[in-house]
Length: 299
Image (cartoon, rainbow, N blue to C red):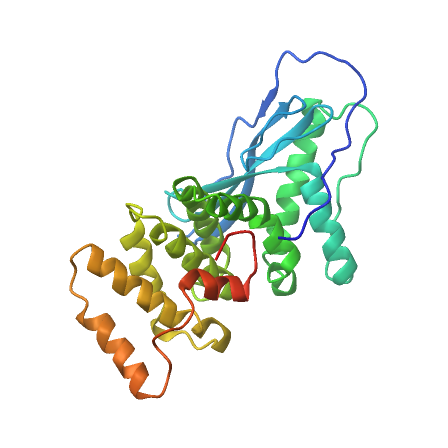
């Protein structure tokens, strides 16, 4: 795993005391009209944390207090999204996203107005509210521009911290703690990208691997394995197809562990074998994932 420079927020050097360390918006965005389904980014609350506190991604901050913004991602329709997801991000996460996009796609971001750093008053309710509204507008804009939405900078913003943390947990064989992080990442990405996009399928396969590599499969292993198999039925991306046989082999073993009928899976593998495709002795699912997207987990 590549090391990353520590992220430091611009912090107020004053020692002002705060009676309220949570900023919360009293109302939420209205639901879309006419039965439409709308992707919505909203920051319903922000927290002022002391130095050394751990955020939702498990990372602790060294230095002075800082603000963590809770970003809610929803697909609202006639009713609110029944399965909203959320991530916690700091000012410098947004700044890193903006600067990366401005460097690689200057024309596409020229209309974006990014909130400037301030020397004083970083923790005032007014500033937090203004920044929250600005961050929401930026994210809403990014998903409407394919070039920006599909960028590595946006993907890193959406899943980078959680995915690194999950992979570290997998490396430590703490799969039961890694799985919830991966589940949240998958649900988040699946709201923004197509079902069979590379980032979604790669995350889904990583989730299946995490659920099945411990001595006792995770309780949700079959649920995610079945979804992965359905998603792969019509995948044409050659790069992603290298995961299909390891996925089938993983599901075959899981079905055997759970006493399920393996006929269909065996037929698929036999059909591929008849076409001259190597179906035995290949990489495991975790190894195939690592070849496409090297990270911290042991393979």
